[in-house]
Image 1 (cartoon, rainbow, N blue to C red):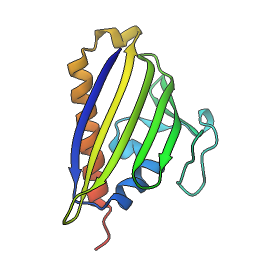
Image 2 (cartoon, rainbow, N blue to C red):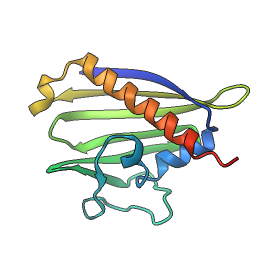
Image 3 (cartoon, rainbow, N blue to C red):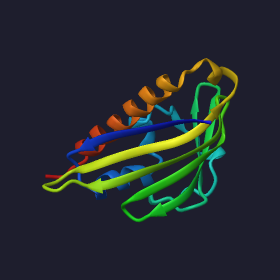
Length: 148
């Protein structure tokens, strides 16, 4: 089993980062996941506030990845598992949000996974870098959504 653990900081408050995590329609803008595939998803909310058990599907070309939300602690923790992927198996992840004194949010994204298929070509270090890039992109995206 492999793992990753990355940190990023955003000037956005946790409520803004949280809203970006809950709304799967924002993920293509910051997570590098391709397009949200509504027809392959299950239980998506119409208001952008998905609940535990929802399966979100993202398509990039012919590659489909489906993820199930496994836990939500309001404004603090978003947990999910990958249920379909050509590269990952047994992938479970948590995204923890911590308010930074003086403003902003510390984002900790960690997970464990096994690889298969083309994923066998990826080193643990490459996945760590990719997840760091994703966490930083979330931080930047949320910062751009602050209404001043």
